[in-house]
Length: 298
Image 1: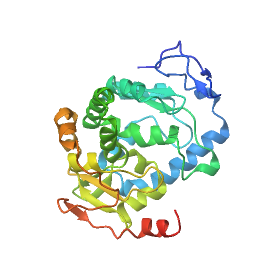
Image 2: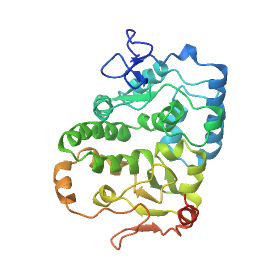
Image 3: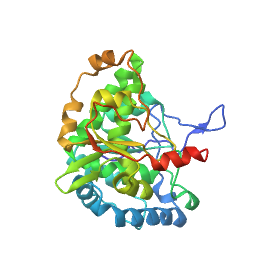
């Protein structure tokens, strides 16, 4: 399904001088025809760098999804063409937004199989780190996995669960599930650990760190454990959670989180690099990377 034709091309200025979209759902035109040669060039640099890394690191579903999409190195993808392909496969579409959107807007989109993607791309000097997700993170990192029916159902279920959690005041716990699966999840395949999280798949440095470095812990996924665990938003993760297969997410897609939230009440939080005696430890990290950063005030 293509993006509606009556969308504003940009928002109007809000009280803080930022861009406040005209529409309540924050959807805008991607404005594909307005991308510059330099912006397409940044996409190409990022795309080529990641596609060299990922064939032996990304999970099979990611590699297959990428192959089946109208996406390549030479230009930033057109969301309309991506949506047409996604709709045929899993009923999803990509909608352009100006950047981060309010929680309830984000969940409403996911609950209705719309993936909100930032329409801007990072500058050439920001290749390795960007605070706000851009078109490369959102499209390259997320969209190939939405071609897989299990991930498509899981992320829709997360959207519905997010709307409920927002009302119940338990959003911080559910956000950790999204972070440690959709963004920074690893999956066990027959040929070893592989990446399926978009935050790893769209990052050259974390694609290597998550699988090869001795520093982070790699722990079997457990819902209660994940909901108690803080995460890093400013650096590599100290612990990665590993699912046994993508099909394992089907159970999460249909779970009633209300009893889980009740179990979480009063339980202690777990710091990102801490291991528990109850963990299924796949590899115990040395913690060297983050210890060095803390030692030098990082």
